[in-house]
Length: 225
Image (cartoon, rainbow, N blue to C red; front, side, top):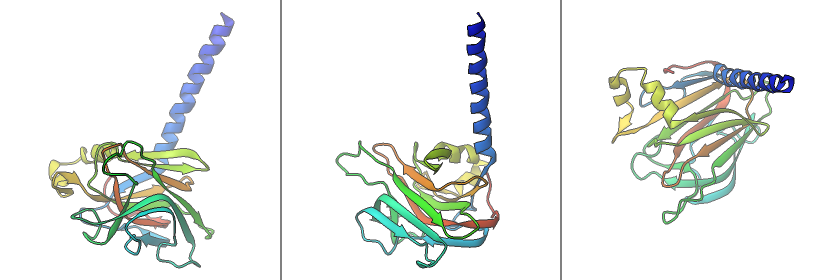
């Protein structure tokens, strides 16, 4: 009986720890959907850069290093892995032209999909605490997951986007719809460290991202959450 009580106590303690961890994750990240048609963050920064992918060739890039327009001596280095660059065909890109980034796939068989990932490093004393990107043609089960030292710290999915929109009038959502799909710039403001992001999609879907912004924010921008 005593051992059963100890096991029950340990179980409920573990549950409480998991609940606390979930609450910490939620309270230490603020997500904002920028006003409709905005393709970059409206936040204020100590430093920030942007990767638009327009200089990259149309193909799969096993590795790609970006300095987000700040040069090799700038404070940000981003290392992309397993990245597919495709040209904008209709509405996919932030500027309706150029290139965008997605997960490699083949049109015949997209069952085995490995997320494309981004590892971030900053040489500034002020750590990277912001990531934002333009998310186009949003589909169910598209997701971005943030890690620190290999441990997941935050996950955000297409369903989370729709849950935010449900708080507001349908007229507000209509501003973000093109041919029935959501298009928006999403800003992530972190109060906990992160150093890796993985972009995921399910088979037969096609996550489409553009205008990756990385930096150290000082004031959050406009938008709603």
